[in-house]
Picture 1 (tube, helix red, strand yellow):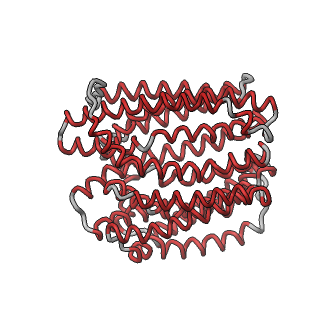
Picture 2 (cartoon, one colour):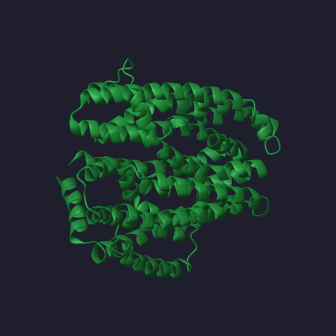
Picture 3 (cartoon, one colour):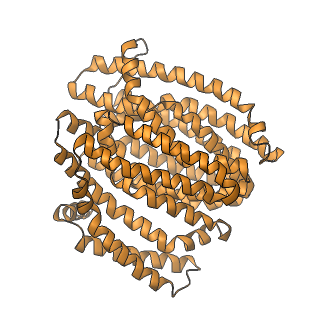
Length: 501
């Protein structure tokens, strides 16, 4: 099995594992921290998360340029490029630390009306540690990007899987021994540093890649930023979509409301990870297709091939969440968080099409045509955030959710026409091949099963799991026999054959 296929499989294993670990660990964290401190943990994490945007999209640039230098077997150019990017990262980390220092003294005034004195004290300690975490994580992320550029996906994914398992065990033990939210951010920081060290050793010893700091090319800086600035702008938009709600609610409401919204956003993020996680695996392949000057129909066919597989997975997840989401949240974190179901479902619904078309974004990045997407997204999300700030005071959580969801839906519609213009994307062919039959099956199965489970009370984990297993089995059998083509069936059969061997 190639690195690409192994990487894709491991990416999904990592996503499933992350979701399972998160779902199992979150109730334990909430129970040990309490709603108030958990809300502080979510709020400060969201606030500091904006500093992580100072990556400026350079990791994506590393993936693209390293793949290009590797294809040309240009070792000198690669070293010069990596030396330059590392110096950029060092400067960024220093600037980030200075910004963090000034923001630290503003926390009291920003959250004076929504946090108690004790909540502010805890939040400020978390803030300092998380700023340090990001300052070392930014340059450290270059090693993972180098692996992607070399299409070496197995090691970084295995490392991430190990990290999630170790993190869960250590956090569980720490909280069991009386640790609190500060313990969690300390654990995350230590693990980040360890992952960076191991990744650096792998890149140097296994891939034979060196990052000589003595090499610095001023001309490359401009070229790097011409590419990465639009990735950076879209990263800002993405961060605002997922994190601004917590900040707005933290200012206008209370930490418990932030916690409820945070659970919904977390579940929506897990859903998004099912397809977007594989996007980094696709960027090098998209770059190769662009270099070969593949036609619009070739690029569309690649999008369809990947999009169909994503569709089968995503529709299973979202239909399952429609049917069993309320029961799950009630059993998982309690009735107090039931509003999280609606928050998560709205985000999942609007994310589905962009996730199915994730390869289209890889093509835009490979062609360096992601400027328009970034600008449009920035405009619509900025308007949505302004509306959210006003509407939250009247409608609470949904005053944040509705404007952001509408902005994301508008972006998705516009991007389909942009794909058509920029690489002759066959919109109607894509929808016919990827969505038409799948949506019909999705609607029928969900409607029938909704009627069936309405006759039962899913008030125990046994009944919940039994219902999930029955529905998932029915969905997978229907998908295999009525929706999958020969190519997709062969992929499934080959996976089982390898397991038997």
